[in-house]
Length: 184
Image (cartoon, rainbow, N blue to C red; front, top):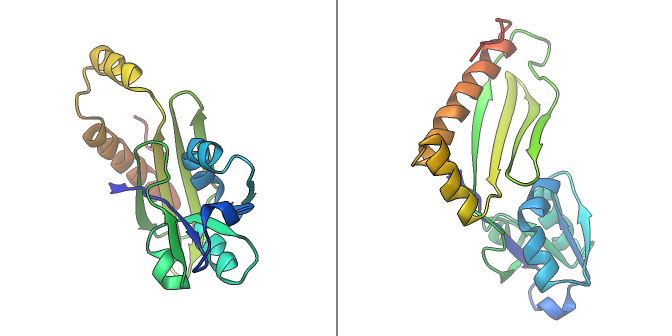
């Protein structure tokens, strides 16, 4: 699993006081909502197709700031206005699924439990199939995490989630390649 880390980016010379409009992807906004509300309460948040699109738009003077991955700063010539603006620990995984269909892709799928977690599967066509991005964000508070650990016996949530994500990936791959949906 890859940790999800977001930063707030702006053009060189921009300060937090200059930020009136923040652009980002909906998943990043959900993962940084509390930080944005507490640190930029007056800023408007504009949703973009990706965090990279948000950073690119800031570099082109379309928005004041972007919530994006740290590497977007160097790529788009932006400055980091704030580090680690995500509200909670989150992880993601990327993998390639090949298929026999015309483009190998299926619709995007999001599973949400606003009080606990969000899992999202985003499918994008490639020349040889599609790229699937799975994102998992844990929104449970410390007390609920401890209660969940006691109730389920799962002591290492990251390892358990990695196994679950791998099972999901295998199922998506099987379906994309024309096989039956695996039953768990």
